[in-house]
Structure formats: structure tokens, C-alpha cells
Image 1 (cartoon, one colour):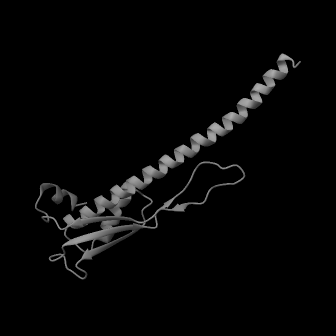
Image 2 (spheres, helix red, strand yellow):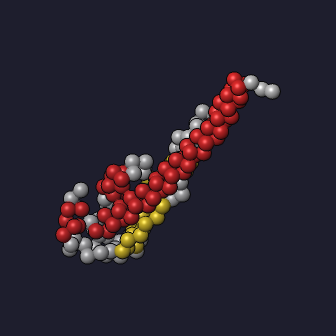
Amino acid sequence: MASRQQQKGASVVEFALVFLVFLTFVLGLLDVTRLLYTWNAAQEAARAGARYAAVCDDTTRLADVRALMQRMVPAISAVAIDWSPAGCSATDCQSLRLRVTGLQFQWISPVVGRERLAAIALPSITAESIREAMRQDPVSSTLCAL
């Protein structure tokens, strides 16, 4: 029959093994929630960037659009805007499509036996906006001054 001291030692070992599995699960869950948050924030930044480009009525302000989006999600680096119809000017464009590409997500959860998981590339995010009443609402005058 095992002594009380040996049973306590076995309980500590069992707790350590179960705790490692639990901690790995919790950290993995936190990473997945960070991934979903990053994806959602990038979609919202794309929507805000598309609205900014459409409301401010300028086909040449890509750097301003990217800067606005990077204030929301600093990891955004590559943004492309396609105006419709192609080759239109600020006076005759009808809509635009904004694409965010090259967004990377870095895992932070440790994995046993590896230093760090490699960053994963998120799929491109697209937002569309139609031409609005340019600079006709009170919000657009402050928005375009950014």
C-alpha cells in the first residue's frame, strides 16, 4: 500500500500534466480570439477607408486613406483602390473598391518544441463604396481635413 507522501506526489504530477494541457488550450483560445479581432478590425478599417476615399472625392489620396486605416490597424501596409469606371476623374467617378492585401497575423502562444509559430497571411479584405453627396454633409468637412 502506498504511503500518504507518495499519493501527494502523484497528485502534484497529475495536476502539472493537466495544467499544461489546460494552459495550452487557454493560450490557443486567446490567439484565435486575437485573430478574429484583427480580422474584424481590418474589415472595419477597410470600410472606413473606402468611405473616406468616396466622401473626400479625390482619386489621388491613397496615402491619406492608408494613414487613416493604419490608425485603426497598424499592421495594414498594402492598400489598393480601384475607381469605377476605370480612368475616371474626381468629378465623374461612380464608385470605388478598396482592397487590403498582405495583412499578417503573428501567433503568440507557445508550442512545445518550437520557438514561435510563423506568421500567417490573412486573405485580402475588400470594401466597396458608392459615390456620395461629396462634401455636402457636416461630417465630411471634418473627415476630409484629417
